[in-house]
Image (tube, rainbow, N blue to C red; front, side, top):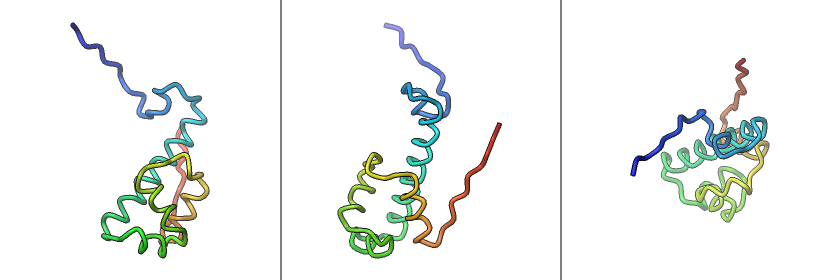
Length: 94
């Protein structure tokens, strides 16, 4: 049996059939969640320590590290980055 492969668009959400505008937001949310999880891992934070730094409940940190992206808005993820002293920038490309 011959395997078939398809070239990725670079955005998994577009590849899954989401509207391009919605896919862009989902991709941003995914990137920010990944960045926050890496921050927690890099700094070897417990969920309780991460919760304190982020100003959220430990259960929300659990949702974050488990990748429950549907529980976090783009605005909330940007706010969490800001609470860590980080700046999120949006880049426009044609």
